[in-house]
Image (cartoon, rainbow over the protein chains, first blue to last red):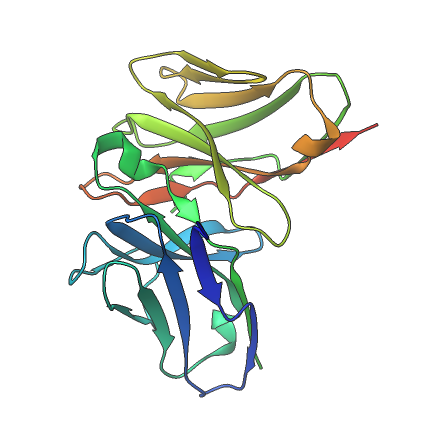
Length: 115
Length: 113
């Protein structure tokens, strides 16, 4: 099992460009999440999806869109990248059952730089 | 507004000694807490959790203590090993339903030989 995979690992964008970060999990989890990690800020939730076909905003959703393509895949789109979106992005997944849902499994991250 | 706070950005301990990482929270409605560990260039991994009905949970070298009256939890690592060098995040589920977690800012632990 690969667990949670993310592509790409690194990306450099110019201000105003768009891109999609891809995430897939093979653990048959229902819930999936996107976080960003910034120095001194910890991990902040951008969006999450409790099940296929549903998405909900997290703490910092502005400037992002998400798509839960199927049970396995959850993508994050930046329509018009800004330097403030320079960050490391993590995708995670979990079960939906009670406290088990809080044990989230993370991918290796995508390091994004917006110039 | 940070609901889970880790006020020590870094901690250095000698191999074999105890590491104590601290976390404070502001929301008295939190009823479950988790610790995650993160190595450079990797995603965080779940380490240990505790429910608010307990004041201690132990898993091998790792023990988490919860003091509800002080809204404080701590992670003890005994004995500390060089492989424990990582960033440690405490987290709690956001109130209002769902499986959303709020994380602290992390503490970088360095275990020296």
